[in-house]
Image (tube, rainbow, N blue to C red; front, side, top):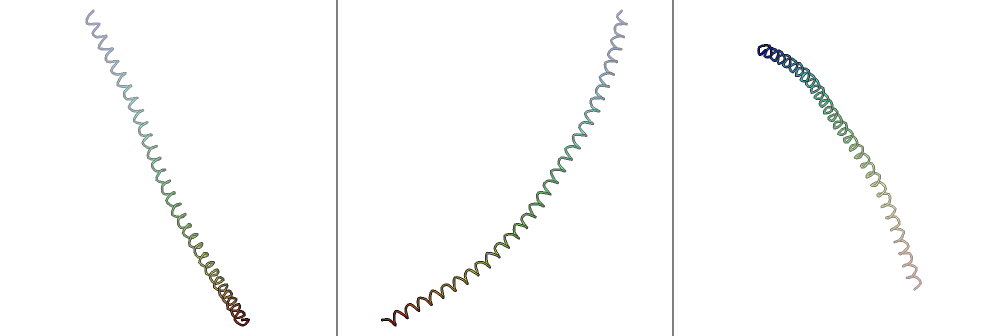
Length: 111
């Protein structure tokens, strides 16, 4: 009985080892495939992040250029308007001086 029992145990152990090795191959194969898929997904996400950063930088550069152009046009228009207003102010000042001189002349003549 002892020899048969040991043979049965060895056979069961061999079956157990074969099953465990098959399970290990299946698990490690699936995990390797899963790991590979996850690594590829991570690479795609990193690539997408780089694309977003590039697009954001491009838009930022374009926006800054447009902003600079708008600012330059605004400053140019303000300079022109201020020059026109300055000329108007000078003309008004001359008119005021002329009126003041006329009033002084009339007052001097009347006195």
